[in-house]
Length: 197
Ligand SMILES: Cc1cc2nc3c(=O)[nH]c(=O)nc-3n(C[C@H](O)[C@H](O)[C@H](O)COP(=O)(O)O)c2cc1C
Image (cartoon, rainbow, N blue to C red; front, side):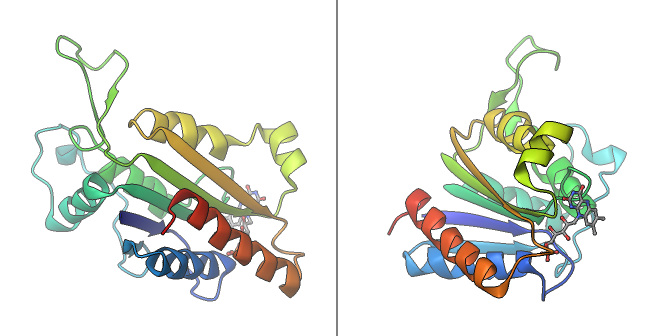
């Protein structure tokens, strides 16, 4: 399979980077082709300019390349920390610029944009790995776990990705080395469950 891996974290020594490296190793080990997009390493510009909003816009080569990677992916893996209940700004900008009309969704004929979009992505499965310093029960009780609906409902379901898994690892700041190693083993298992050899 052709898989897209998107990572948003500025620190190569972070647990998020360890997750992404584990994902890449597991998936290539299973025989898949992995396109690994480390947004900070490539200094992805997250600002959507006005001229790029229309579906017919001509895109800068860097954005067009991301759109191609997304459109060609049979499966998608996203790795990022919970920052204010949201993806980091660099990833929010990737969503704004790359998950765009004509690539990831479209509106039906006679629909001026007010209707329910039709998903266009060919990817049938996606998995989102998040890290957080808030215990899961508190994230849900106090904040409604916004990342769950952002990824599952607002983005992947709308774009036609039917199977979406998500795993939030918490609490990272107090975790032991053993705990993080066990989490990475879980990352490997979850990747293999979704994208087997
Ligand atoms: C700008 C910023 C915002 C953050 N917001 C939250 C938050 O809303 N909830 C939370 O549990 N942790 C929050 N954190 C903590 C990160 O989620 C945590 O540091 C990260 O998941 C740990 O993984 P890492 O070692 O890969 O960075 C925030 C951290 C930063 C830098």
